Image (cartoon, rainbow, N blue to C red; front, top):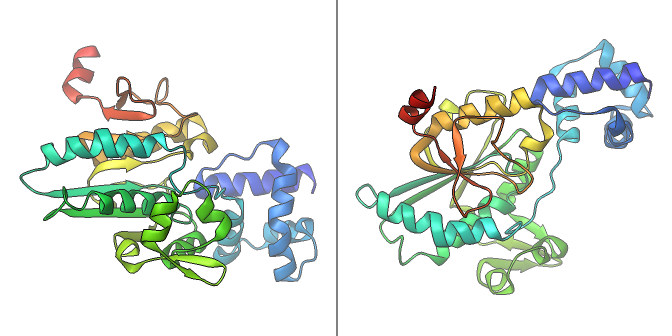
Length: 278
């Protein structure tokens, strides 16, 4: 792939979903476009890109974006965020939302569903505390393909062995040959919707908790700021934001501040305090 062809793909992907592809990702781009090229009858990734440069119709662009998006995820990834949810965030919400008995959670860039389903299982385990409550979990992703996989809730032996406690596997999954499917009681707790983080999230409604983990690392600083500002607008004043272990709001957004002693967890900055500081 020539530098010009790579540059075309990089600019296209950045425009469509904000993903930054540096020059050292040329091999990754070629390897991920190769299957599309074969399907389109172009032979090679280079040939496909040359065709794409002449014809950027929506279906082709969608295929390229979906191929480039990283979908690495697994159940209870990094464990600590889910312990925080169970031991710190959920008890606080039970107290703060006692009058309305409703909690809304957004999993942004949810990939194939392991994160929202992990949260759903935690909520199911807390069924006694949440009796009479309405818990809504909305999971979004820019890729329609990963959303399709997530809705089915079917995972390989390898996928269920990555982070999922054996007791939850036995309790909430049904074995189907060499795969495992989540029971309807867990799948029904999560709703899925295609959503591009570059767009305004106001249409999604307001939330008490937002998980946006291990996705900001793929964007440039301006895009990170824009995404965080959008999340701040839909997050409750006493809500919480989860970021990945390698991500931070420091130097990127003034809308959030780290929660003391809770790594990776952020609280909304009081607008009054922001005005006073300014």
